[in-house]
Image 1 (spheres, rainbow, N blue to C red):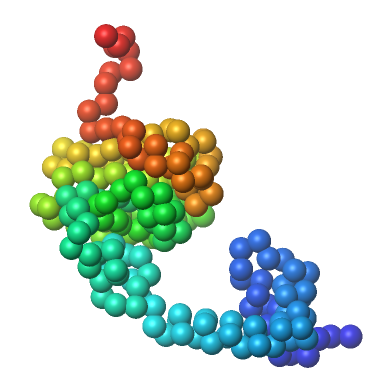
Image 2 (spheres, rainbow, N blue to C red):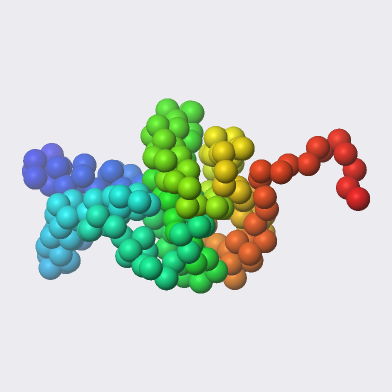
Length: 209
């Protein structure tokens, strides 16, 4: 017996969520339709509103309902610091840690050649325009310590090398392979405070001291 077309369409739509397979999507669909029609209606309305009202902030590229998000529009933020993160969730995690008072740029992804995601797909051209506006003095790279995040951080550092702003990387107090969204706030704050410069790399063959 096949499901009704409307039910199949709902299940297929739920499968687009990360980590949701066919069985989980089917359980979600049954729950929304049978147990929580009010919740289903709220979900539908919220998705419709988000799709029709959200756009990207003109300066930092995060989601916003206005041309400038609340952070970019805040005159109390430091305009000379620009923190580069992968996703809006990373921005929110840094804000919760209360360790940074500058502005942001959200890549909306990370470079991943295996997934055909290159510099263009993560808005590196837009980042360069933002970082080289003659106001930014330091670019703090806060991409995740995954293989893709490290590749992205390296490419950003190379693109900015010798072009004005100091480039730093948040410290490795974060676990290798870890993602900012899931790191405890005190560890994240310490990583930001102990960020390392990427513009004056020492020769690895030269002993310290």
